[in-house]
Image (cartoon, rainbow over all chains, first blue to last red):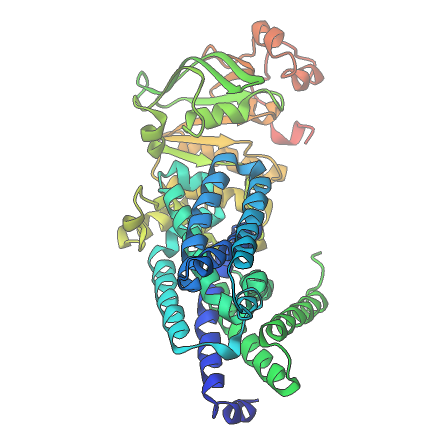
Length: 275
Length: 259
C-alpha cells in the first residue's frame, strides 16, 4: 500500500488530497469523539446540512462559498445549541427543522443564480481530488483551532460529556463550553466538506470513534485512535477510488463503514459473555 | 456542631406548569444532621434534589444552602446521583471520574489537575477503599464499586453536605450495608441528606427521618408519625409489611430485610 501511495504522490492533486485527508482526519477524530460521546450525532448532521444554505447565499451574492459555509455552520451550530440547551428532550424536532431550512435556502439561492455551477455538487459530495492550496490552508487553520480547543479544555470537555449535571453543580460554565464545542463541530463540517461532502460528513465524524470506542476505554485514547483510523480509511479509500476510478469521498465512507462492521464482528467474537 | 442551618427551604412550591410536584415544602437541616427522606416514585424526590442544587427554580418560596442561594451554596454540596443516571459504558477511568470533584467554576482553572487536587482525589479514593481501582475503566466495575466511585467523587469536592439520591439502587445488599457504615463514619464531619424510596435501608442508619410525597413532613425525629402516614400514605408500605405501622424498628440488620 505504501508503494502504491508513493507512486500516486507524484501527482500534485494526489498530494493535496492526502494532506487534506490527514488534516481532516485530525479534526474529525477529535470532534467526532465528542459528538459520539455526547450523543449529538443528529445535531452534527443538522449543522452539516444547514451549512449548504450559506453556500447558496454566498453563490448568489458572488462571494466565496467557503465563507458562506463557515458563517452558516457557526450560526446554525449556535442556534441549534441554544435550542438543545433550552428544550433538551424535544430538541430533535427543532433541529430537524433547521436542518431542512438550511438545505432549502441553499437550493433556492443556487437555482436563482444564473450560469454554470457544476462544482456546487462538490460541496455536497466532496471533491477530494480538487482540493486547492487555499482549501488546505483553511483545513490547517481549523485543525489548529480544534486541536488547541480540545487540548486546552480536555478536562472540562470530558466532565460535561460524562456528567453534565455534576459539572453544573460544580459551577463549570457548561453552556458556554457546550456552545463552543458546537462551533468546533461547525468548523469541522467546513473542513471535512471538501473531503467527503456535507451529506457524508456525519459518517466521518461518527465511524472512526465508533470503531475506537469498541476497543478503548478512555476519551483520550479514543480520540487518538480515531485520528489514526480516519487516516487509514482516507488513505485506503483514496487508493481504491483512484484505482477503480470511483468518487473518492464515497469510497472513503464505504471503507470506513465496512471496517466498522468488521471491527464490531471481531469484537463480538473475541469478547466472551460475562459470567 | 449542631444549630447552624446548612439547607433551608421555606414554603417552596415547584414543578411544571400542569403538574405541581412540590407544595408548601418547609425543611431545615442543620450541621451534623443525617436525614433520610423517603417517598414514593413520582413523589417529588428528584424535584426536591434539583431545587436544592439550584438546577430548577421554585415557583414560590426560598431555598438557602449554607445560608446563600443554591447556585452559590451548591459548591459545598457533594452530590451523589443515582449511578443509573450516567452511561456505564462511557469510556472513562475511575481516577478521571473522581477528579471531577475538583472541578472549579471557571474553564481556565480546569486545565490541569494541580498536585494539591491530586492529593485530595487520592484521599477520597482511599476513604472509599477503591484506590486500587483508580486506573480501571468504569464499565469494568460492579454496581457497588461504581456507587463508591460516585461517593468518592462527591468527597473530592470536600463538601459540607453530602446529598445522595437513591444510593442503594442497583447495589447488592452486602455492599449497600458497607456503604451505610461508611456514611455513618463520614457523618462525623459532614451533614448527610439521603433520599430514597427504600425505607428499610434508610431507617436503620439515619439519625432522623422524613417523608416526601408532594408535601414534606419532617420533625427531626427518627420515628415515622401517623401524620406522615396520612399525607404520604404510600411511604409506609414497607413499614406495614414489617407489622409496625407507626414506628421504625430501632435496630434492624440488612440480613433481615427483604431485599
